[in-house]
Image (cartoon, rainbow, N blue to C red):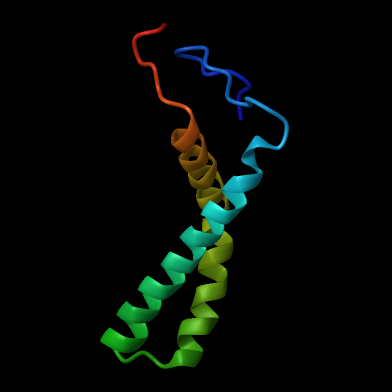
Length: 87
């Protein structure tokens, strides 16, 4: 991740350990994904739970980089207001 935004030059690492809280946001994304897919596939489409669990692990591993970046962006957006016209 860049130290500063290439567009507006906002400091993206305001303090050491700032993104530690994004770990909890990432956990919320993983939990929401698991619950939503469980509800759709197991409850809605009557897929066997064993097949669901076998498919869940690889999809979570593949989505890890996406959830990591999304959690960091979400955490940053909570605390730093974007300034689009400051460039």
